[in-house]
Amino acid sequence: MKTSLGHLSYCTNIHAGEHWSDHFMALQRALPGIKQQLSPGAPFGLGLRLSDVASQELCYDERLKEFKQWLADNNLYVFTMNGFPFGGFHRVRVKDEVHKPDWTTEDRVQYTIRLFRLLADLLPAGMAGGVSTSPLSYRHWFNWADRWERDRIYEATTQSLMDVVEELVRIRQGKGVSMHLDIEPEPDGVLETADEFIDWFNQYLRPIGIERLNAIFGMTVDEAEEALREHVQLCYDVCHFAVGFERPDEVLDKLKKNKLRVGKIQISAALKATFPPDKEGRELLRQEFTRFNEPTYLHQVVATNAAGELSRYPDLPEALAAFGPAHAEWRSHFHVPIFVSDYGRLQSTQSDIAEVLRLQKEQPFTEQLEAETYTWEVLPEGLKMPINDSIVRELKWVLEEMNNE
Image 1 (cartoon, helix red, strand yellow):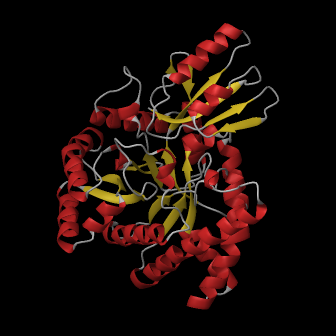
Image 2 (cartoon, rainbow, N blue to C red):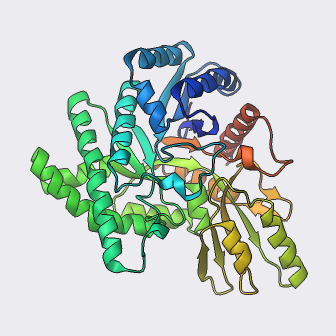
Image 3 (tube, rainbow, N blue to C red):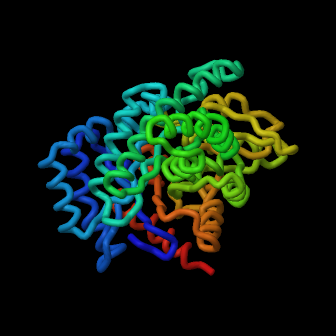
């Protein structure tokens, strides 16, 4: 739905269904009622998530025509897609498999191009669209301490990603539709932080991209740089940056100084806790985190000590095992409901969402906002609630936060 801060919706990865027929059925059950509560008299936008299989199935003309007619009949529209999870995302063990296939592979390239071709057909006239994607790969699959290994991965993933940029340039030239690939840094991704995204863009994407766009389209350096900035942007997942203790104002300032853009904000919250000095209190907090130690998704932990130095752990079990007296605060990559700030002895990083929305209000830096809490099925008992009610409550909380002075 169109708000004062941009188009707002939620990511449909919350609805299970890896085949298009199953996912479409889930959308048909959920969306009319959700829209009625949130945007009864105006169009309501979707953040569509399609698996690789579903994206192939939707490419059939009759299925796409049927979906477009359903959108029109229900006053719905698609403005963004989530192209990060390629395969199964519900009721299967995901963990680091969420990064497969990574950006070294042709499968990732073709999947992403397919999403953009669908999005170009679904976007309302005159509207730009985005597809968020993985942070190139998962760094623990490689010897990340080896500079030559890092360089090889950056080179290979960037060359693959440029295949998508070429397609976006062709669509722009042929159909006049502007779309952007939104890179989503996350803990333990090849791109983990704002600094890493910026360095990668400047040191790898820019030189490789300028050369490719000049050779294929005859672009000048300035034209190629502008095309890269238009078609490759940052997905600001609030949970991910909060886990890494990155301040929203500092992230946005760095992007602005490098003339880089935010394609969309994924509105999400992480778990956090500040440990007290007494041993008993610290152990109680550690035990609280064990309630969220579930086997489906990665829940990376970033710990800080009294000096502000960071220690990173690839999942909750490793952090729980390494817990010690030096740890002052933990933040864990667990997408908890955004409308809750306290979870007993634990808290959420909800305040980071409020800060990002405040900055968006002061000086808008994107037109796309998407709530992304996908962990409803794996939350501890007592925190679960009906999916549709949860979606409505999350988006109402965002709308209320937008209206706060």
